[in-house]
Length: 105
Image (cartoon, rainbow, N blue to C red; front, side):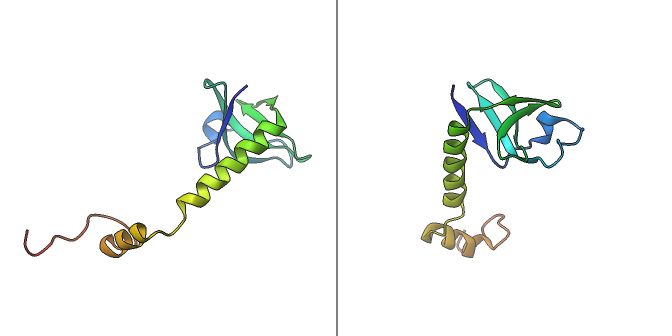
C-alpha cells in the first residue's frame, strides 16, 4: 500500500461537518493507493487513522511516519531562503504581486 500525505490540504472536506473524536487532532489529508483520500487524524493514543465522513480506518503506522517525515522536509524546503527568493522578494515586495515596470520599457 502506498501512502501520500499532504499536511496543508483541507482535511475538513473529507471528514465533514461533525466533530473529531474526543482528543483527536487533524493533520491534513492522506491518500491510499492513489485513489482513496481522507482526513489524516491522530487519535489520543498516538495512532494515525484515515477519516471519511465520520468513519475511521486504520493506517500502517510505519508508512505514515515515513510520509510525515517526507512532508515535513518538503515544507522545510519550501521555507528555505535562497538568493533567488531573496531577490524576488526585494523586487516584488513582501506581499508579492507584479514586479515594478522598468523605466526603459
